[in-house]
Image (tube, rainbow, N blue to C red; front, side, top):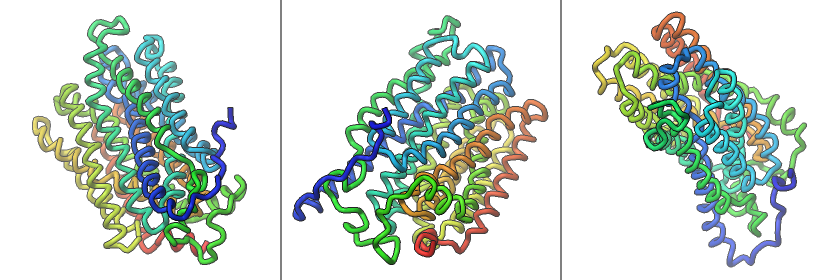
Length: 454
């Protein structure tokens, strides 16, 4: 079984006259593959949030559902790190679609079989499994990015690829609403409607998994092309000899990742960025329903706008960090987190009935929060050699999901149940401030210089 995931071996190099045209074609092809594939992961990652208002009507408390929801973040955080170690030594063409299909099967079971949503414990287990398979998406995408795009172009390409989760997350909401209408009452509960929230997005994700498989290739050498550094004449080190060196798992962990202070800094920042990202996103349907009088359709529109607003925001953030701040990611992260802070405060204090203001606030938060999310992933790729890139990204993801998203899911549910929504928003406000301060610590750091001097 493990042989299926081994890196594709290099083959004889193509004739020189074919290299340029083949490189251009395959670079676009593999980029589309990881973009479509990663977007499809988000069709089946956060469905449970839209099902929560229905489940509350069935008698579950916010604390219980927050506990169940935390499972996906716990397992995803661990899996992203574990799977990253494997993905650095695996073929993304097999790795990414396999995780997507397995995750989709879990979502299908939650929609089709009533037993799998019958108790908090069972939902926790199912969401834990879903999160584990979700961890097979980011690391192989990172492997593709560092092997097919050189250091000087990686910032822009990573920013464009990073909006895949906004595309997928945004499309999830209307797909889930359509699914709820199509499969209402499937479990036998008259008018429940939440089953289709899981079913339709999962079916679409499986289709995309096969498309992804046909698009992705492993390394350029596996299809007869030279390494990207040679093709672009863009070497990350002065020696030009170590960029294709394979490292052992021990070297990746202890030489290039765990002893890198800047990787640790962005890992800590990720805790607070993810707490804000998911503290707003995951609880938006419930908060808007309870406090602002939104119905399911209106909440899904807000959810959609939040996600898709991140697309131009991410691209702007990447552009600013490259052009205005000359490759320094810290200043852009600091500025964007201050903007998130302002939008969260307005969202919190806006009185019920002003739905347009709530929509604008969610659009603003979505526009601003995904830039810092992208920057942390980009810094993780830049701060280490490319053969260790997946593991560095996995470590930041581990911190973000275990420290940030689990708190946003479970802690927010407990705090809001015990002390109300004001207490939850106090946590969100504090997290904005801390994230901005940690970004400020990396103000003058350029990731490419870290690699050269490591």
